[in-house]
Length: 59
Image 1 (cartoon, one colour):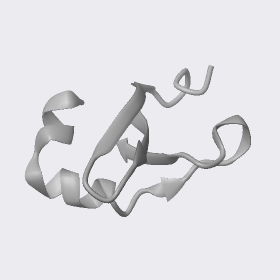
Image 2 (cartoon, one colour):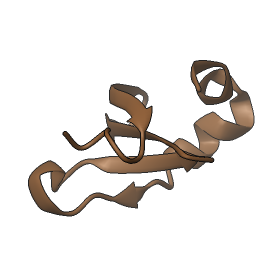
Image 3 (cartoon, one colour):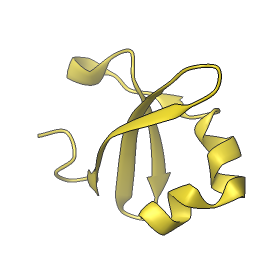
């Protein structure tokens, strides 16, 4: 998952992530297969808070 997130194409997509609902409201998510990255962003950087299987990433 980290290799994919470091890819320049993926980095551009991170700025278009989908908003998260529930307890992680205000954060964004990016899905690759069965894995999710939960993150926040500023104008110039992305801070990844969690990476994990989509079944467990919200726990």
